[in-house]
Image (cartoon, rainbow, N blue to C red; front, side, top):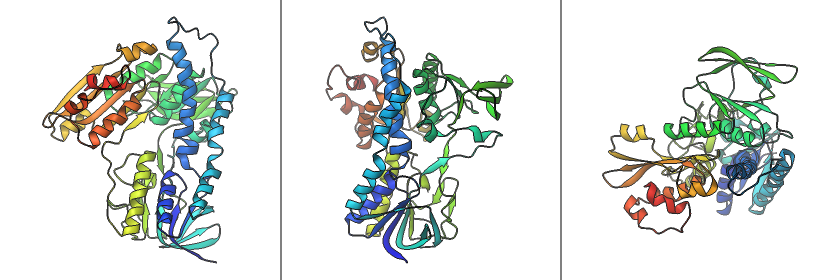
Length: 450
């Protein structure tokens, strides 16, 4: 039996759900499919559960910073099992809730692996469905590794479901996953080591602030080994032995757990895109600026599934999905607006970026005023016992507008939202300084940063 839809969405994460509900609200007959529980990576296996675990680490670290300042942290420690139970209290109800909400909005929810059997035909568990339009929003999966013993590694999903946290953890790769999980693990009593083959981890962030983050992490026992490659991982009687080749030559690291944090790639391998006439590459489906496939006009893609200029962030995926849905509904060619979108590494403290890096601004020919501020001794940090913090604001001298903002400090991810609004709407730093903030708050620090 064949079911016909106006739109079939592949992937029930935040992007896919946004597009499905938008089109259904306009009277389209819509179906959505996923082979995993509904909710996607962010709600179930990424952003949200990660930050719940980070809360435990924040509390422990906050108490540690106030030791000898009036707070006796005594035996304060993370109970990993109870913290994980708290996480499950949020994640476990999500799939059912998402599916119920979709059904209530008129979206047909399907389960199984979707594969193209033609340009507008999708097979799901042996049933072929025809759709006038198809949106691919299938997300990403951990990038393949190329060293012997890679099968012993767990991925981020596994880490977020660990029943017990082991004592010695090696994180492979110098990106978001490794740094965020290492900062959680260190406050929970583990000894983390991050292995990065490059000279500088977190390459998308300001180099000076990354160094501050690495130094801050070393205070709680996080070791970062740079210019180091893993040659193999082997099992031992008590765990694993990680063989590395670094600046000092070959060496080994004994670990109880090895975690894959070396990036993610679009999850497209099971879609049979060739049969659908959908061109793709290692960065996702080949799409035009308005997110339509360059080779199949009935197919659109968004989020990690699409090769776009957007950052691999859930809010960006949702923006793209909504734009794709609007374009399908109106036969339009609108492109997403990626201006001033903040991104953060939720370490403790967090590291944030908006807009251009310093070298990007200079390479683009802008005359930039680099306003670097060491905030480590500011009242906002002194109050909580924190001793590390800095900001770097890049201002275009020709119009007094911010073109890049880089922040490292406690609570600065929230501060980034104000900066994002100012950048998005073209406010000058003079206009930003004219606003009176609640005092004393981190927001009131902004005028001194710019």
